[in-house]
Length: 252
Image (cartoon, rainbow, N blue to C red; front, side, top):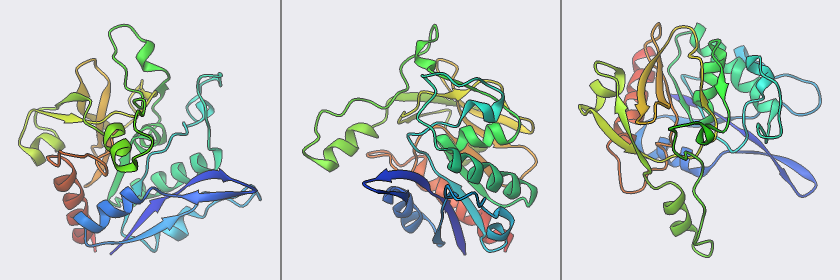
């Protein structure tokens, strides 16, 4: 089986890189039987990604997170200084791939920015700077205090930060057999209006939507946290990636 993994554009010296954090690849290697295939976003040359050609050749799609945010024009919003940074080529590639995967009933797991893209692809909207809203706590990436030790810094960034409440009878509740779980948190944007065909599968105690599922597809899940990097807690990560693997195998 081949799992397609979306790349992000990253400026580097005199060129632009297509990048994926190794944590995604490690999660696939650890919990799945699939071979990873990286899908680059388009370049600035004007050629758009051929999503259908790529989807013909993969068995599942993993839509990654990133520090960049989906441009508000993708969901009818106006750009402000607070919405960036952006990655327009990533936007185009991810939205096209998500649309095609949903149409094919292809197994899809969307993480962090990926959840937001899944919601927008289905006609939903996003809200920016949610930590500034009344009764909402801070979901942003925590400050790093141990820059000299990469492992310690990663553990600090991705440490579990808050609880989520799983929707009774929902996908995650049935998969995990619990009512609550604790997750990491690295985002400033979150779902505002839920997209068509989507259902809320988990929420934070402040009401932030933390997981969604597409009700018409066999496996189309989005999570706002990073299950590929959850130090010290694997109640969600292992079962989620393993079930993604099961869904891919069942479709072959």
